[in-house]
Length: 248
Image 1: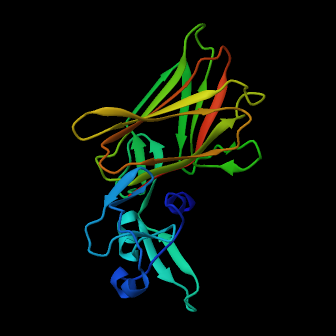
Image 2: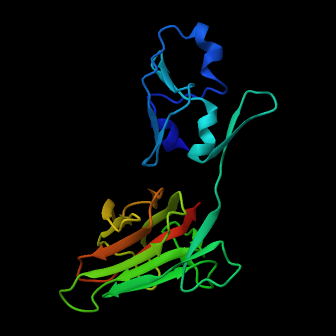
Image 3: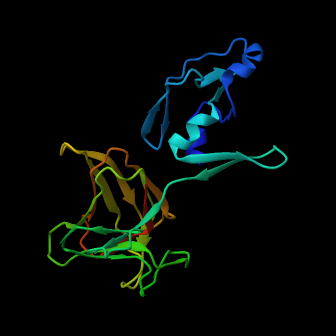
């Protein structure tokens, strides 16, 4: 939610309609036509529009459910509470059995000089560098299986425009190898729309000196997502996305 608030000139929430406060808003600028959350743009159609007032940007609370948040107030009225809405679906691999609608399998995993493992509540634990353990993850080891050849894992999920966002944390790890590699790993995220057009959403580089980084990808109107995980180094390197989840 921090990213959402910081996307404005300054964080501000206005609960209720703007018109109620019109007498106190002399000089307000109704110059905001849309709100963008994690790359997804929401057009403002209501008469109660976001506005700028004395250097702060405000928006009416009716917009929050459409943005994926359920607003409420504490009993004393002094605290604004935002709860993320949407069903969480966890990444795994293979065919999903009926009744396990909280899981999504990767229909396509292509390894080139690499090996991959995608686990939900798996029996094998992986650890962050600080010792934090995870049972849900996308794990990849890239390396020197073939000399002078790029190590790459391409992992694709078919989404059919059913999801709002992908969330995970990502970092280099030490799992099967004796230590964390000093080689960087690059993750290119590709999004494919219903018409079959694929675009590069973002390219991210991870090094051994970094703490786990948030990887958040907006998925509105996305038919398919592909993670291309690669390394150009001559030795093996291990990488993981911790607790990968798709949010409807």
